[in-house]
Amino acid sequence: MSEVIIFCLTFLFVLIIYEIFIVSKTKRMRIKDSNFSKHPMEINYLINIYKLDIKKVNYNQLLQIITIVSSFDIAFVVSLINITDNFILEVLIGFVGTLGIIFFSYYLVYLFYKKKGMIKND
Image (tube, rainbow, N blue to C red):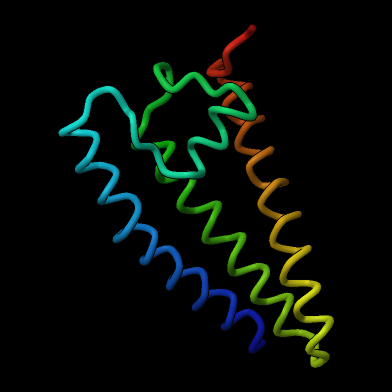
């Protein structure tokens, strides 16, 4: 039961931090800067790796999806780390788990936008 509480609290904490520091900052920059020159790192990853067509995407929806996915990733890894008592195993789970979950979750975001037809076909 304590793992569920830690997951929920971590998820909410990271979600609030993302909303304050990433989403609100990006929305302000987008109003001032119409050429989208400064995207968050997560959006640049989707654009460069998966060829997301930023002109077709609802930018605010993309920011919210990124916020929820990243918050879930971090909360999930924290919950996994909290299960073990071995420090070396915690570090290993933290590093490998973080990378694996981030790549997998952004692949799911890619599949979502591919299904909607918002990926560039080269």
